[in-house]
Amino acid sequence: MNLARLDLNLVVALRALLEERNVTRAGQRVGLSQPAMSAALARLRRHFDDDLLARVGGHYELTALGQVLLDRTSTAYDVLERLFSSQADFDPATENREFRLMASDYAVAVFGTELARVVHEEAPGIRLRFTQTPPTVVEDTATLLSATEGLFMPHGVISDFPATDLYDDRWVFIVAQDHPSVDDRLTRRDLARLPWVTYQRTYDAPAVRQLGMLGVEPRVEVSVDSFQLLPLMIAGTRRIALIQARLARMLAPIAAVRVVEPPYEAVPLREAFWWHPVHTHDAAHIWLRETAARVGARLPRPDEE
Picture 1 (spheres, rainbow, N blue to C red):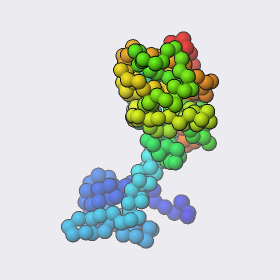
Picture 2 (picture 1 turned 90 degrees about the vertical axis):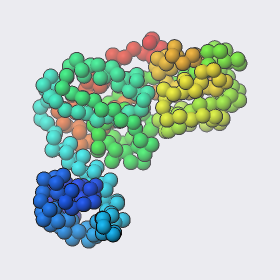
Picture 3 (picture 1 turned 90 degrees about the horizontal axis):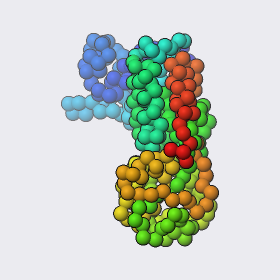
Picture 4 (picture 1 turned 60 degrees about the vertical axis):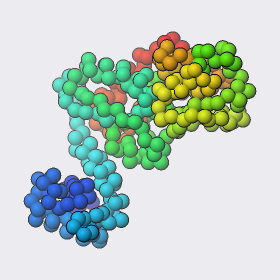
């Protein structure tokens, strides 16, 4: 396909038409008259050789191809917006913009809060918007990264994208403060016999794989969507959970749990900031990731907090 022959304004029209499913409303949304938007729809139908919007009764519905294009158009729009908002120079003291970042609740708690504090002091016009990393991040990394400024995630989950290291952490276990059968250290037998609470998504995959290599199959009793919920599901029970040391020490006084060391040498955890290559040479993004790296380097070691 010869992109030079395409009118990129059609991306704006296509997104409005697919989301509004109404020519008049789509035109109002992008500032085009009804005849102009109808003409844009006709050009799009010729290009895709598909109706895109099919009349059903008194309204329009997306065709099968229209449904496929709905998500792709939104992603393409975000990429174009970031591409054409790239800057050769960036002054954090005077700029006014928002950075969208994907992160787990763990990363926001132990790192994002400090990053937000530093950004507030050095760049008062900059806004940080943290969104929960979706479970599809492994299968659709490029699409997700293209729609945001970046992703906070440990090494070992995704690869083949630029990244800068932020800080180190380690895996520990937590148990209830008054656990009846666990002292200062768990045994491998404890890992197999005691019920578990787990974080149900994939970010602790290296640690879980290590357990499998040790022949341990966790008996999962509860799974949750948030690392910060793990201690609440442990307090007052016989359960155990694997959690990051920084977060465990932050939450232990709140949830009546205590940290115990694993009965094996746990794989290390190195958190990184990942981004799409389209951002690599953008001045604003360079400032963002340099600031993130500087904040990460200042964090105390997990056993010193």
